[in-house]
Image (cartoon, rainbow, N blue to C red; front, side):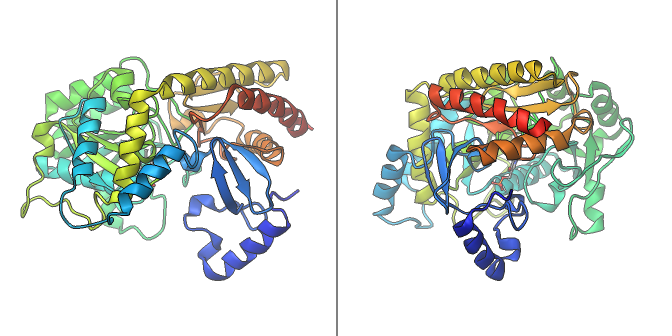
Length: 436
Ligand SMILES: Cc1ncc(COP(=O)(O)O)c(C=O)c1O
């Protein structure tokens, strides 16, 4: 049975006429019968064009930390933009947001931008300018946005990783990337202490940065092994490499200070987006004074017409204030833990081997084995077909995680205990239906 109801289907047919594949981001295309058209969101729920309500665990791929259409955030954006949106000058509100980010995350300096991809791209440029080196290390299954340099061995596009674990090949995740770009990318398995050390010792003179999602936010939330992030920190210190945490998914979600606070390891540069604006477009490149001050007018470029625009800035100002004032993170940890435990119980009762990975604010479910995954190659061993069948049964019943198990279940502050209970009831039914 298709996910689209009648009205949704009609609207999507129209979308197909004017928009390639009917969507404005490839990740949103689920085929011509299952791609939804959403008309409204409020709190933990979204509604499609047929008026069907879903408890939303995709949360726009993570940004919605408080809940959809959070009244205070909406009001603050409305108020701010009545006085204009963009002036090509500094504004008091952007200064306040930078101050909040520094206080909450412990970074020294921040530059604002609009999307995660812009933030990661600039972070890489800063690291190259800072070190005078050109290559960088990234990890298999990690996604750092749409910039050519990062579109190698990502989770979403590569159904398998190329090369052996010991000697991986950075594989392009899309057509359209110049072949030469690959030379700058060193792709390694996450959590492999020896591989990173061997690579750094052999090539450190060419390596500008180690770029890492501190947990695999685009590959089932796989966690770093004990000491792995510290290991990266030590290698970067020893060999003059810039350690960059891509916290586009973990920032302001797993702690107010993000992964740096949660895992207790400090990076040189950090990128934020998503939860920073509760769904409004804003992102940031942040980090240590010495590295951030590589940016230099006329010499080391960072720019953007819309950087610091009042829409995103007002949203971030309100979102960060609420994060500091209210037990947002604590609440999503509690609710997420209840979901992880409940799902574990149901799958155990149903005799399905599984692991629930990640952290309560962003967790994932791997099926077919109870072995803890440590990298993306491990992830690829799990029963993705069964996961997709279960998730489609969930969505039909009004609970909406992504049907792709690589994408974590995200939680928002608006999600109630009743929503958790409803989700678990539906999960039980969905598993039974999917097994049939
Ligand atoms: C870890 C990470 N980095 C960067 C990006 C790119 O962000 P954006 O889609 O805002 O460009 C994403 C997007 O999902 C992400 O998950």
